[in-house]
Image 1 (cartoon, rainbow over the protein chains, first blue to last red):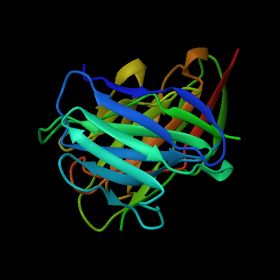
Image 2 (cartoon, rainbow over the protein chains, first blue to last red):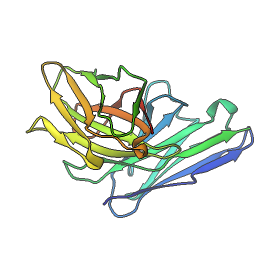
Image 3 (cartoon, helix red, strand yellow):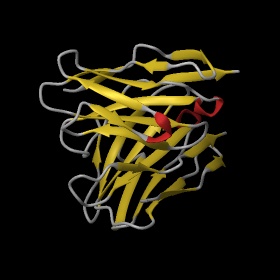
Image 4 (cartoon, rainbow over the protein chains, first blue to last red):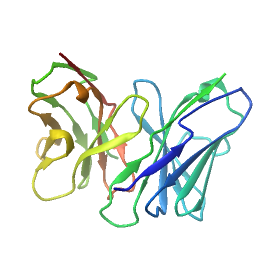
Length: 116
Length: 113
């Protein structure tokens, strides 16, 4: 079945540094990928929709300059948390679907970001 | 706008007992409905989905769900749970195919021996 690989699975960084998270569709092409954020014991909140070859679409309240998204190819989207602060610590999950009308979303295994 | 309500934040149950996790949605148009499972520190895995057709949907790991349009519900059921079913379960809805999912807050299923 379709697999979405997310890397790294966890990262610890110092406040003020930037962190890049990769999301790859391993055996299918994905024009659209999605980035979610999940706080402890809470649901997934959609942050942005990543579109191959064009700008990402951000949800209301998500800072586009803080969370940079690049969808450079049909199999790779990256999320960069710039100038990270402790409040950015969270679980980030990406998802993608095959480019056909009845394909479900496939999720990566998530990235646990801890900013110290 | 669409929304999903999972009334139970936590459901404790004994092994081999049946379980039902409740999900209600609201939407002004036709919807697709999904159940996902999340194990600790992992992403989400699709359990089952309702797109159209039969209202009783069977998924992986022995789970099933029934779409009830009049009650706007999509409850998840399993006749006999295992310890390994302990996880967080999310109900989700989409109004436009799979383009955007709205998730419920999740229900933690706790299976004890």
